[in-house]
Structures are given as C-alpha cells and as structure tokens.
Image (cartoon, rainbow, N blue to C red):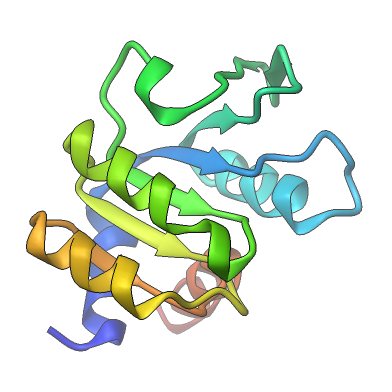
Amino acid sequence: MTQNKTIEDILQNYHTIAVVGFSSKKERAGYYVPAYLQKHGYRIIPINPKLEQGLGERAYPNLLKVPHTIEVVLIFQRSEAVLPFVEQAIQIEAKAVWMQLGIQHLEAAEQAQRGGLKIVMDACMMVEHRNRAKSD
C-alpha cells in the first residue's frame, strides 16, 4: 500500500487519535493540528505528562495509561524520540502510527509494520485531511 493510500485509509476509517506531544500552546502544531482534527469529528486524546487535560479531554502521561482504545498514534516528537512511542503503540494494539511533517524514523516504521500497524511518516495530518476534503 502506498503512503497516499495509507493516509486515505487512516483518515476515513480511524477516528480515535492519541496525540503524543500534545501542546497547550495554541500557536504550536501540537495544539492546532489536533484542534482542527477534533473540529472535523476525530476524538483527540492528549498524551503529555505535564498536562491534566487538553481540548476538553483528559490528558495521559503515556499511551500505556490510556484506559480505552486508540486507533491512531499521532506523534509530535523529534525523530530520535519516536521509537518508544511506536513500541507503546504496538503494545496497546493501535491500528496506525502517524509521524507528523518533518518526523521520520525508518527503524521505528519497520517495527510498527512488523507489529501490524499502518505507518505514515513526514506528513501533516491536518494538511492531508484538508487536501482530501477539497478533492471530495
């Protein structure tokens, strides 16, 4: 499956998104991207050990502490910090890992695929959603 097809599949079929590196600062992509996605019907679960909540949802320190199903793990972290979150995504049986624009980690991507997860790297979920909404 090409990355383009994977993106389409994720955007259409998965609606619960854990945002690793969720930010409380409105000017940061870790805030405005999940805020946009929430406005378009996705459930956002903030993952940030420094926050109690975000966008009206309880925040969690890591993926393993979330008590309900997560379909997509959206990562806002430096590329070199991605691997532990991919390992957690596999542990919790998420369906996909999405690394935001500028974030790539080939080893983590291969590990996610071996664990049965769909993978997107170096793409903005908000931009991809907008582009598809325009073409519909």
